[in-house]
Image (cartoon, rainbow, N blue to C red; front, side, top):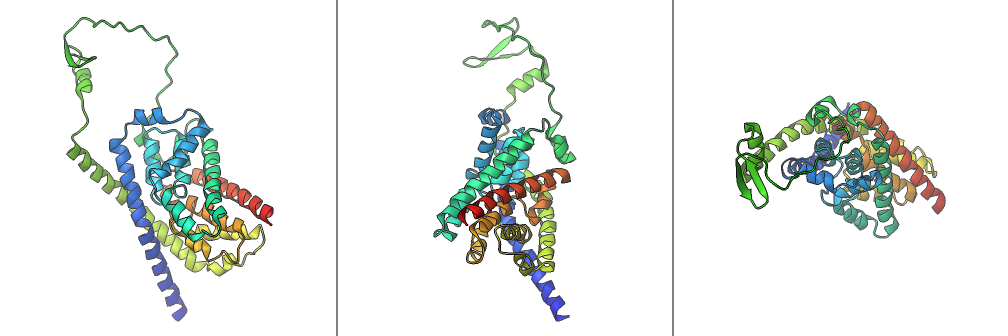
Length: 343
């Protein structure tokens, strides 16, 4: 009975620690998502993105320097990018890289591993390689919608059919017949056009106070939706940590292969936030290889037990399986090469 109560207390403590650790970053991600919704022009955003898939994936992977969030806050931002019409490569690149490739995590990793600076830079480098590779692979899917949840595809609307190629008609610099009102130098408004067209032309952005209210309303909606999912994910992660002790995972082996698998499994189970995971990994530095430590630091922020529930608000199960397998395989290969190279 005493052992069961101890496990229950440990489970409750783990649940609240995961929740308290993740909730501020989820809130930060929701704030960034709402800012993207109301203050970022879709057309300007799309024009800024490189046309090349690899460069687009790299651009998405580096957005974390502007929106530094952990693996809980990146999901609402990635979802908003998809809803804004951003290319798949940008959204996937941001989703996988942002929790690691941002100034806060870089600084925390440097503080923890200042005696092993190669860990700091290889963590960023390996993360970019994995994120860009997976983003390019997902971009091979012409339409990402079959991989997304139905409610998200409805918010995105139907894809626009490709317009047939035709030569652009010459536009005369002279005004057509009708009644016009000069709005500003070089801009005119045709007053006798259909009412809907006139309204569209004179439509302006809502005043700042109204936009801020809309931002708060959107934050409440997203936080209510994603917060409930985070609670469920944290509860599952806490249960697994109690049911499967860390000693079982760490006892899998200390070899160049088994140590990587053990640390990847540990990263998936403990679901620790990327802003503090480097200090957790530091406690294993004396017993595990550098490749195993990097496997923990690279794979954990991308896919862990806690954020799978949040990923399910964006992707269908099949897509999450693809993401997880690709991230695991690429991380394993990169860190195995490091283990074999460093001996």
